Image 1 (cartoon, rainbow, N blue to C red):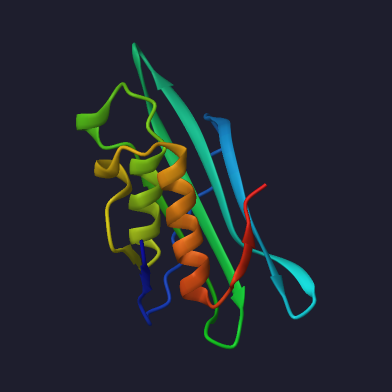
Image 2 (cartoon, rainbow, N blue to C red):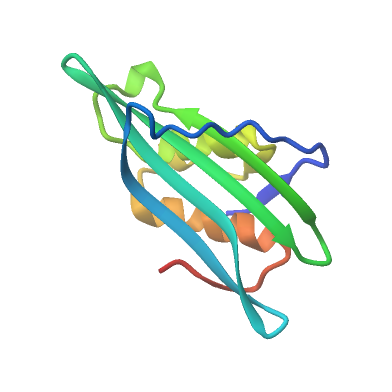
Length: 136
């Protein structure tokens, strides 16, 4: 999988903690110039509505590599056709797209679960210029 980053800056992430619960998070840790950085932070929240729920995802990207120096963010939520499944890949892909990052293949249709999410985050970090990457 590869990620392409648009040259246009985007910053539209929303903090979702008011009436939603934090369910999952992921931080991409990278070794860069002898130190550790956290260039990508992802948070998933669940909003419960009646019998169903919506999964929200926020992505924050803060990169200082020679290839990309930028701060961008994006938000996404579970599309209605995927309700009530607790799917993390779809809102992540929407959040990445809203931050100006497109993936060479869809996380949603690959049906890889967490493995597909990690692959997308690794691809994004590689596109930012990081090579030694870890997701704790």
